[in-house]
Length: 196
Image (cartoon, rainbow, N blue to C red; front, side, top):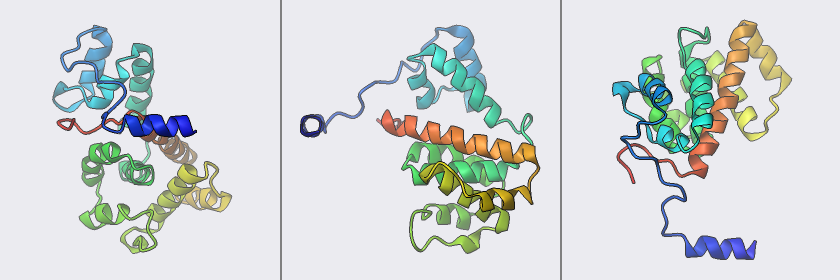
């Protein structure tokens, strides 16, 4: 650990270990076309550009998260999905994830008060009053799955009173998947488009 600490000190001026693939990457074309079709304006995100170092991983990632974000394929309320994702972003210090999901959460019905409140999810003065009962259960489940992995049965039972099995499975899949996303983003120091 002393050696690793010394290496970290020596490389503290480096921004990231692996650079993004170029913006104008064109191969493998079917995969890149598919990724562009999911993005606003057809522009690859920095996340995409990092994933493209491994087309196999990028392909599976695109398929999984395309399904988890689909309002057509999923019955889960998009407000709950985006609330969970933004909560994970704050809990795991994944600013890029919050940056990408604040707008969809707002479109799904989040208020400015909720967006500001969720930024304090780790703080003792987190304002639960900004959220209704079901939203607070979604937050509880997200915190438990993010911090402890295994959620409390009473939270799952309470959510089951408000959601069908399909919605609850989808919510758990979103929380699980976006914890993976945040860890990938943080480990590879992926930043918002336009930042270095």
